[in-house]
Image (cartoon, rainbow, N blue to C red; front, side):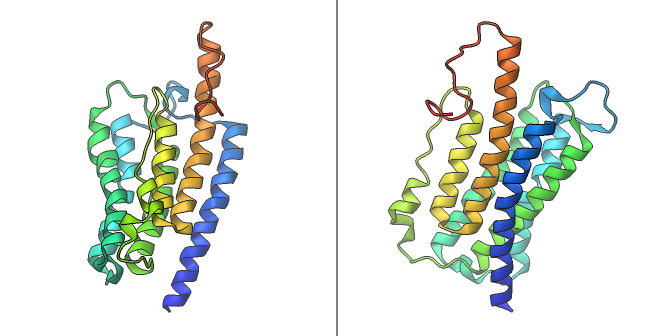
Length: 221
């Protein structure tokens, strides 16, 4: 049974990688009516605060449920605890703090919120189930260079997507798992499309927008 579920978790991780690539192509072709790109007066819209709470909350609730309602044996080890705590703390801020700091946010279409809700449920289960039941690390993993490098996040001005990609690449590196890597790849693919959309919008709206400015990754892309 455990072997079958471990195989399932790996399969779900590879599927997340494939979905990330697929969504990046679809978003590039059809775009996504989200944030400043939402059409005024569209039916079935949620306020920015409501949408953020609803769509992000599964990434907090699902891991907490997995930890409380199941025999999370691997959480007896410190590396597993630290890695899962990194994930949970991020989504405490993302679902319970950040939404209430939004001022003047654009409404979100209900189907965008639903898609985000489904993904957060999927990924919340994938990350928490793997770390709490199957991930095996040495006791000194928290001093391993691969773990330590995951915490060296670098931020640049107006590059919030780059910061988030760095964050989850660091998480994937620190967890050294296909599950963590899948989340990092999915995040990169989707946010790169969003970044391109923003970049084009800035170039169209502002004549003096710096032409040398990169899309998301400083000096590269």
